[in-house]
Figure 1 (cartoon, one colour):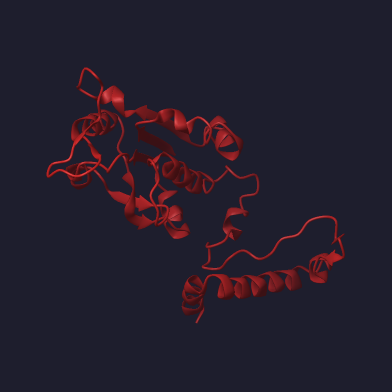
Figure 2: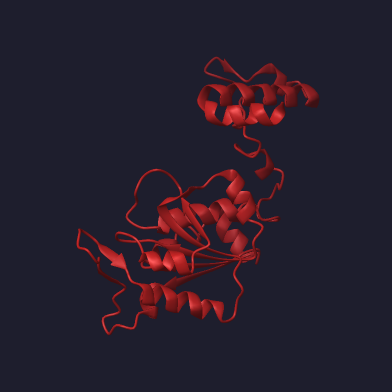
Length: 231
């Protein structure tokens, strides 16, 4: 997978992609990350990328030309499966969406800033508009990093145990069950005996029951989806 990120503040991506699982995925050649400074595509002498909003009002708007210049430059050599705009009014990212997007080969992610992008950018170029929650960030970079993490970890070979991603919360509309490690007794709190039994069928049944109960209590919205799909 190749991900091209268009940003006003490209340095914000140094840390997310410079450590842990994402760093190893890049080093293995399983994913390519290319971060592009939007100012490099500005036609203005001052490299400005924003302008005043028609009709007045507080806040600046990201201009069309730098974004169009960058996207068209990238499209000259690559056919992209998706051009994603990170925006608070987009569809909320969930596991099903991450699963689908992880199958793409080439993606552009545009990070919003200020009061957002000129609406014509969204109409002309954007194929997917994604939010990571009902709140506003200073820019789309952190949201883009979250999106990329959710996709990259699903690529075969990224996780040392490929079954790990399949048992994550939300993969089957259930939250993950409780997990435990050594010691088996800590401050008089014991690990459930079934997990120490070595009986795989009983363990799997316990985990399923725990997932169902935890989802029912904590996330009744997705519990109802699971219940409908299992009937």
